[in-house]
Image (cartoon, rainbow, N blue to C red):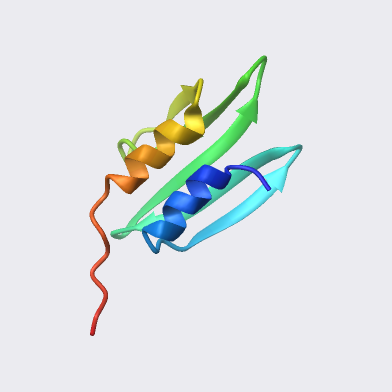
Length: 84
């Protein structure tokens, strides 16, 4: 299973997601506050991920410690309010 740090961040925020894996790369798709988000891992002469977690309408590539960077952003989001 790939993108474990990102999955842990989503679970901590109680955000449901779909995980798939293809050609050894992980992919996460999820909704937050009515917006669709994704984290799509790639290996192209180095590992990285395409994501729109920083701006829902714009995808960007994150390389280096991409899981830590993306997880930190997700963990900075406000908690979802759950009904009593």
